[in-house]
Length: 166
Image (cartoon, rainbow, N blue to C red; front, side):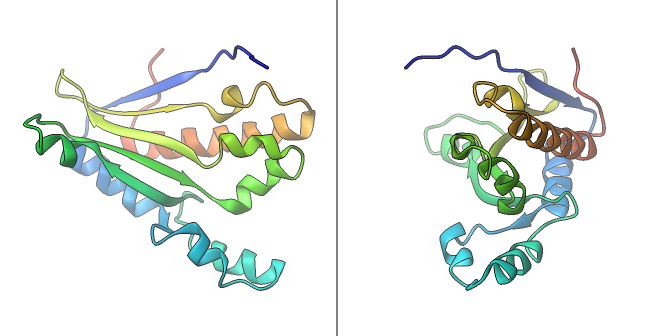
């Protein structure tokens, strides 16, 4: 099966430095960078699972699953860049979609990209999760994905200090 999706890509062009935006991002997100599986296996009941992950949330409701420092590895091949791609999410949010259609698992957790563009401005970029999941059928999935959109947009606006440009 092949399906075509229309994905909404957003970028917030910040007036803040790359370092300030990344710092704000870290301040607003929790972490499970030691590994989702390692953290999840500490819970032995649904209540413990919720407690364990609720404790890992940042003020945004998100936690970092993985951080890929593109700028760091690019330096090893002689290219200068300030860029990090982060896999972030929250299994307590993901379950609101996965319980209706496990196919949502392709797009949760989500990704966000913070980078300094060639114009010197810092950008926060991401694809709206609801558009990535638009092939999934059902109002409950769409509603849950829209709530995820809102949380991701709020985080991007918070760390960048601006709304996305059209």
